[in-house]
Length: 88
Image (cartoon, rainbow, N blue to C red; front, side, top):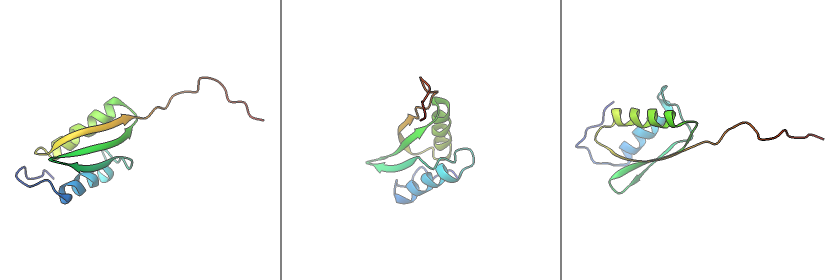
C-alpha cells in the first residue's frame, strides 16, 4: 500500500494513514489520530511504550515513504500504585 511520493498530501492520504493505524493488525491503535499541518502529517495520541511508538512510526514510514511526519505520540503512564487503596 505504498503511497505515490508525487501525490499531493490531501485528505485521502490522511484517511489512508488513519485507516492503517486502526485496521492494520500490527498497529491496531484506536487512540491515535492523524491530522494535516502544512506539508506534513502529524501523528498524535498515546501508546504504552517507546518501542511501540517506534514500531508504529517505522511501519507508517515504510507504507508511506514520501510523507513528512511529525510525531506527537506520548507514553501512557500506567504503573503499579504507590500505596494500597483502602476500601470502606
